[in-house]
Image 1 (cartoon, rainbow, N blue to C red):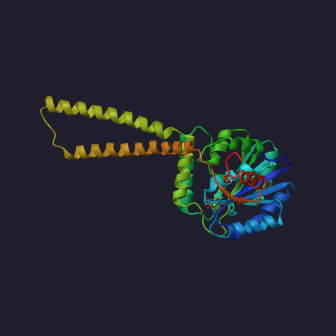
Image 2 (cartoon, protein in one colour; image 1 turned 90 degrees about the vertical axis):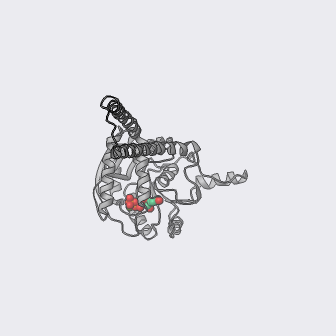
Image 3 (spheres, protein in one colour; image 1 turned 120 degrees about the vertical axis):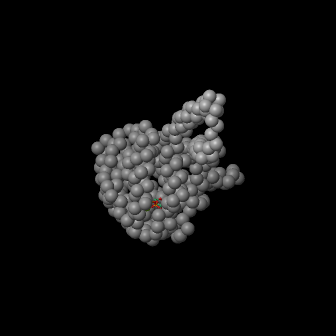
Length: 335
Ligand code: UDP
Ligand code: MG
């Protein structure tokens, strides 16, 4: 359990190769937080950066006792990094913000003010996205609209993870054990009073996106499979439809053979139908496979992430106790 405290606001920042931005990020976050409350904490989660991000974070922690870092043993991905920060946050409310300054820290006081008006979730919705490729904007836009069609959970379109959530919401998020995190969906699923604040998403100042095309695809699949069974029922419906059509074609073939005495020598119709059904079958097996893969990940029940080191008191103490017992230190979601 985390100790009692009176921290008003925590900020969770996932960090993957953000070394050049960290000083400015820290300065702007600090300014925003000081305007809200002296009682704040900054939790940076270093998600296996290949540059010197970790040293920048350790340096900050040495000069500011409100700065905490959690260093993963390798790259576990953006969502798990955010989750680690949430797991160890203590504030009455928590802000999730990207570490590349695409989400302006100056918006935090406004998120906080709106929260105080009685909203447990205040998400920042982007009006426009600067400096991102046409392809990224287009695919993101399509994805959010498709997701909305596929699920009954009202996941807000055009939002990232930049948002402020109440302690209650954090505690419930920690009770959701899924391995394939899709936090923006999970937060929407939880309900409570939710509202939006609009902002313009800036471009990246340094470095490049940590979301490769592959990472983006699997993130999109996590969103869909985590919040919708529509692809599965679509497969079933398609199966029914094709079976009925096939049955009619069979009837016709038998009728043509016996009654009309004309056996068709059509290679074209054969190849088309077998390719078509073969294709549909492969897609269907793939869809089912996606869901099974996710079940597999969840039954393995591994810890969500592994922490190599941290300056968080709760972690340092736990590590010490476990080492005394001679156990290897592993972080767990329940930490
Ligand atoms: N990030 C991370 N792990 C990853 C990829 C990204 O922690 O494997 C962090 C990254 O440092 C940033 C945030 O997640 O703070 C959003 O990533 P990015 O800016 O690359 O995504 P984009 O804005 O291009 O969608
Ligand atoms: Mg970014």
